[in-house]
Amino acid sequence: MQVRFSLLARDQLRDIPETPRRDLLYAVRRQLTIFPESGPELADEDYLGFRQLTRSGYRLIYRYDEERDEVQVYCILHVQRRLPSAEFLRYRDF
Image (cartoon, rainbow, N blue to C red; front, side, top):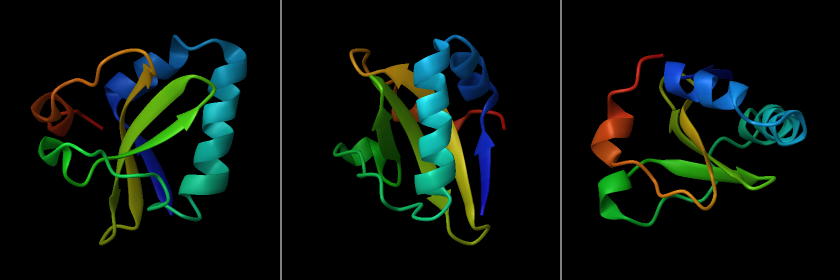
């Protein structure tokens, strides 16, 4: 199982304080690499296929590509921030 972070997600990860960043990365390694579909899907129809993992006050938005056996992390936001549009997420560079 490979986990890929978009360029946006990498930048956002660098801006997160050390302790929550460490918690997020640990959750990615321990949860998403073993159970990639464990995060709940986003409820809005525009976000079909997008899932989220919430840890330490941050929300990691990702998709699981079963064919490639790959988790693709699109963005990481504080839980109090609104989600960007689904269209914005779909065009992230990895």
